[in-house]
Length: 348
Image (cartoon, rainbow, N blue to C red; front, top):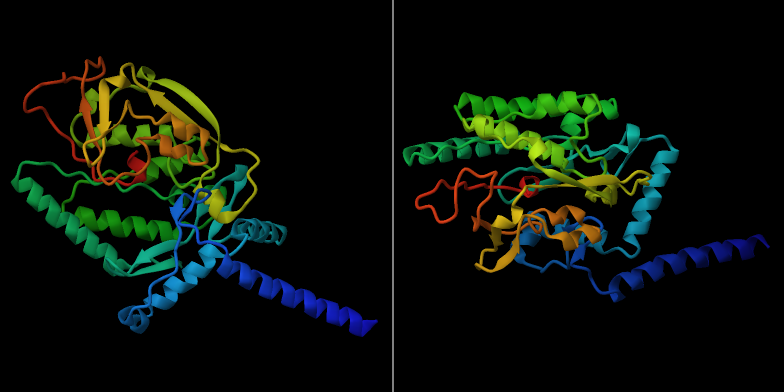
């Protein structure tokens, strides 16, 4: 009887092992994960330079992780196991009070092409190099009479640490290195972290619970602070000028990464001006994407955040084509001011 049980256990183990191995190679690779809203690693090409510097090994490891059969289900199972052990963390994501989630680890760029994934440290040398590059850019723009203001968007863990009783040593060190370095070089900055940290501690909804972005309220606070930094505080459009539409059921990429259960999804707010349709948005090929700033088809999808500015594009051009009572400019004016916004998805 004992021999039969042992044989059955071995057979089951081998069936699972070989079954997943066969499935891994037979199932087609996926290029994109809608749950995590990111591009997945496909089978890397074998090249001599990648073999020698270790890049091939890192890419193949990431490929196996991204393409593993039933990956999403196993991520969820792993997160439930971590919660059962009272760890409060899974896949580098902390789980705190009121369902707040935050990525704790960093992807630390050692240089412009080499990145260390999910680390407990930041590369000071690379950060200093980026600060030097911003300083040089500031000098170039100053010579052309163009103002530069740098607004580093806060990470969730930088401002919601109170929800996890998470020590602020690393976030504070990262903050001091960035803002101290920029201040030493005279680069104008907007530092949102102290105000955001205080607001989140008081229960203000400035950062999503399941996603790494700030909420629309948080984005508005950033806009107002940026306008002040540009010397245009008197032109700030008041929050009361916008109509607010609340879209429930938003579960972001942080929750997808962690696999933690979400009992209370985020609410995504659409703030609409009186004449948003007075603006036309075009892509880098000059084709019209939409009028206004919201692509509503995203609101019925997993990636609700993509509704803002139609998600991430290489280049977008926004043109005022009709009268807007909130704007001080009119369409067709010659030599009107322009704003170049070098952005990531926070700026959407």
